[in-house]
Image (tube, rainbow, N blue to C red; front, side, top):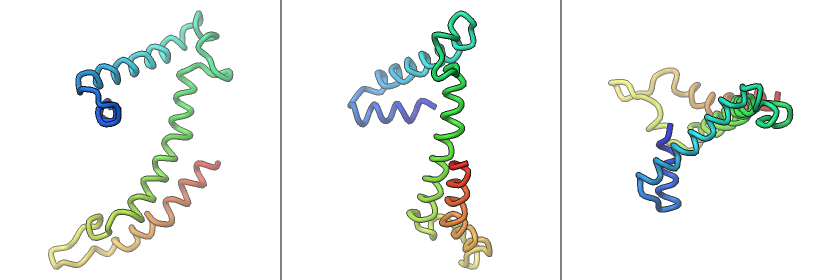
Length: 121
């Protein structure tokens, strides 16, 4: 889970791997503490945003925004930017399996439209 933020910190901010791992871990740890403390009655008023505790806010943003957007972008990337010859398996005879063309059309058209409709609902 920490590899992506660690790599970004290393490449974009030129931090050593050790510093990038420590910073990623510290940020994750602090956010986790906020989520845990938001369940405590003494802190629930302080750790709430828009009437939701921090844990519920993170859950809602992750499930209702980040996951559909990532799924939409992944379908667009797989359907339009990856060479189908690399994406689809080949048989021993050299031909593509029967489901190759329907899979490609589903990734290009059906999946993005369905994910967009889910996101908008």
